Amino acid sequence: QVQLVESGGGLVQPGGSLRLSCAASGLFSYFYVMGWYRQAPGKQRELVATITSGASTNYADSVKGRFTISRDNAKNTVYLQMNSLQLEDTAVYYCNAERIGTPFNYWGQGTQVTVSS
Image (cartoon, rainbow, N blue to C red):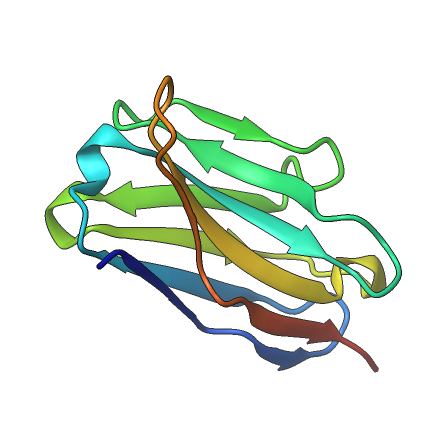
């Protein structure tokens, strides 16, 4: 059974930092593109960042220069370091694992990030 378990969300002031983690089990994450998505109230889920097994990264324009995605294939874990957080970063953040070219696409349960003064 595949599970993606996110952690590290919470409440932070504008300008602050958080580090999200996503631990994958039941799959070998090396074969998957790992990513973070977010969904704010009343909005559609959107891409935040993705990373391939070879560490190629892709970021939404809104987070470039502030967020960094990384992965540890040995630990089956992907991280999202979020710096200079802004009010508009408030959302539920979801971890995703996608094996390109196959129907295998998995989601975590989400972790809440709230940026508020």
